[in-house]
Length: 141
Image (cartoon, rainbow, N blue to C red; front, side, top):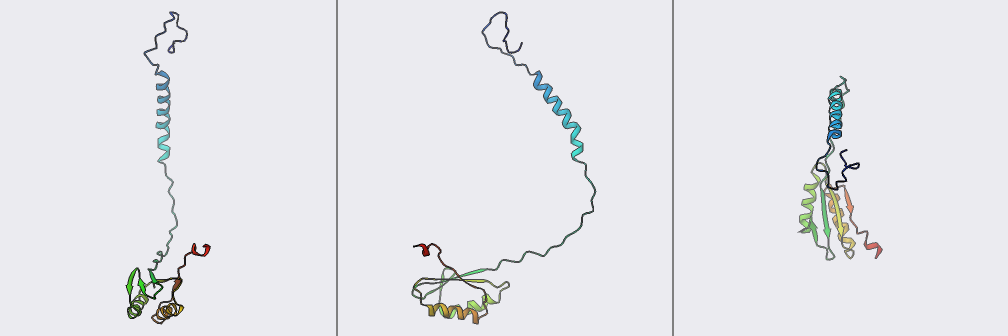
């Protein structure tokens, strides 16, 4: 026997050869199964599928981050600008298709008058999508 369990000589030396016959039998059976089933996977059914058309996904509009600090200084996408520059930038942004979103970020202590002037300038120059950005964590403090 290959495991040496019923050895008549009581030889305690380990067996040096391995019986690979069961492994070869299993591999041959698997090979025959794959040879038989492989042509079945390539069989295709001819179908005349309907066509579908969809519209192109709309472009996401650009986002303009306009920050106003406590002193009333303006920052267009983190670059400092002046009040007269702001009107020209609003006018050029309003002409873009799709129109960009304006996100206002104002300091807590910014005077409302300055925020109202910025909103008025945006609306006057044609920007219609204005949003306010807040810090949700500051309310919990």
